[in-house]
Length: 127
Image 1 (tube, rainbow, N blue to C red):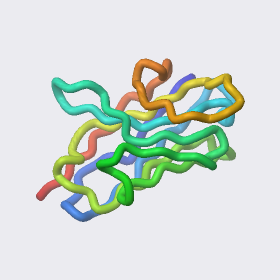
Image 2: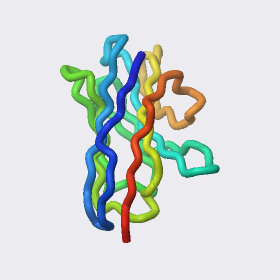
Image 3: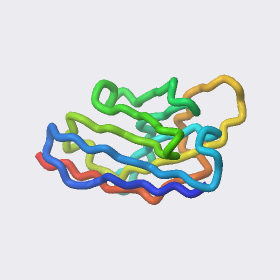
Image 4: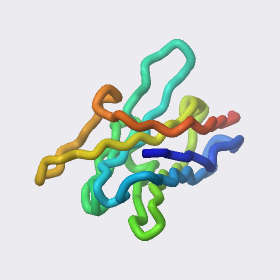
């Protein structure tokens, strides 16, 4: 599976950005997807996850109500709409994928459980 993330950039506090992640190499609908972020010297932090169909999503508390994770299986694309951005959201964002074989979706929040990763896209929020 290859993942190509895009959409990062520089925005003022209170602004919005929409990240995209284009997947290839495997049927996109087979994949549970996630967004993570990582600051220099820190571990990769779970941000949001979404089930195969997009019917179930989950978020870290710090982004609930501000970020929305979605997917378009017809376009093999994962999205992260980020609103009300704050300077503390300034980090590199990564998309990740796992071929989750169980029939019942459960949130997958550990980076170690995702074998495939995009290259990361920088989000910078100025105060």
